[in-house]
Length: 269
Image 1 (spheres, rainbow, N blue to C red):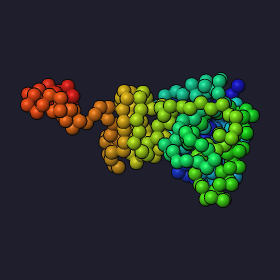
Image 2 (tube, rainbow, N blue to C red):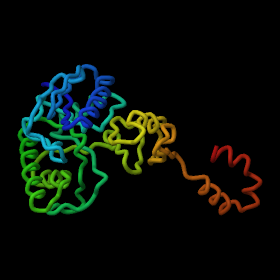
Image 3 (cartoon, rainbow, N blue to C red):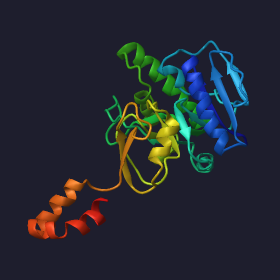
Image 4 (cartoon, one colour):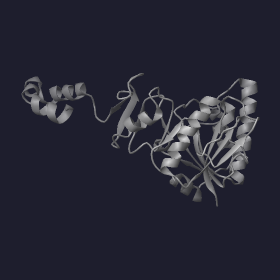
């Protein structure tokens, strides 16, 4: 049973991004086949399979997965703006029990015809099997997407994906955000970010380094537009202000001042 990584890229920018992402796959999963579907001719030893097609539109719809799109039995589809920091072979292994694996989306708007508390998924990292339930899901997803785009001007493809999931019998596994760590908004993480997803101004490799300097539970957010060293602020503890107010409330101002040197050493520094 074949397994591999799949990219879809339209235009020079996205082809360059796909190469950067594919390089990270090569670094951590050197024996994994990588396929690229594109609207241009691409020559690169990063890709084992390149399929040139004129059927892709340069918009959200180009990342809609379709039946028969992947040359593999088990596929890890990655958006071009992703980056691996470690092997993720487990995303193929999970398909021993499930049809498809995907992480939640940070966009949690309601979707017509889908009752709460069902949530949207981010379709930029999808591990899936080429079987009948998945083919049915992808067919319905594309049908709903085209209908909603024409009738409601819904360009994003995540709402239609959730609607298709709701209406089919696909056996879906929800991934942790470690496998799709979004970089455009504040986030929280425990353990390493194995797949980062976004376009930070100082580069996704730099973002990976900063966010994975710690594997403790932490929050992170964009901090600087220009600085590589300060591009992201990573916070593992409550703020100094919180600790100071807590000490004053519990011990009183006088005792807090007396204990300040040790307090600063243990709590802040």
